[in-house]
Image 1: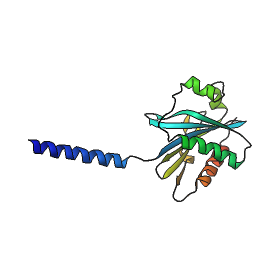
Image 2: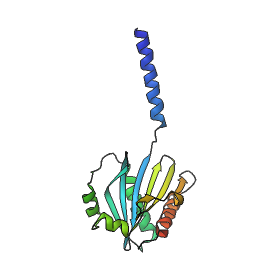
Image 3: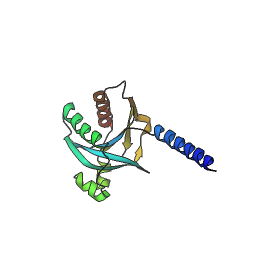
Image 4: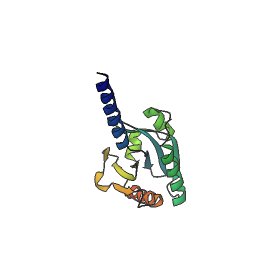
Length: 166
């Protein structure tokens, strides 16, 4: 009987190790809104059942900023998303921290992209804000080993700027 328990324990350990090895090692995310006056960068933390929770740090950049300023703001929030600790914000707290009046106004008067890294791959997914749906047709995928982070950020900005807002 003890032998079977040892074998069963060994199998369970092996199964758990194989499951752990298949999980992604690096997960980062951020969201970027483009309004008529500025870019708003949100830090994404930990996958939840419906996606990432957005929180601090929140960065702002003017709409006419140069690539260096845009890259710096992006880098700060994207790297910060790899931290384990963050403060959960309610929807009302988040919209206030973003210096916006309401979610409806933000969605009607802005464009949005979600940038996500899973190990060696970065995906950029634009949103059709008025419909509150993802635009999978125009999404971008990059291999970190083949593309530089500056090229990825540049393409993400071009995609965000190409989305028409009212």
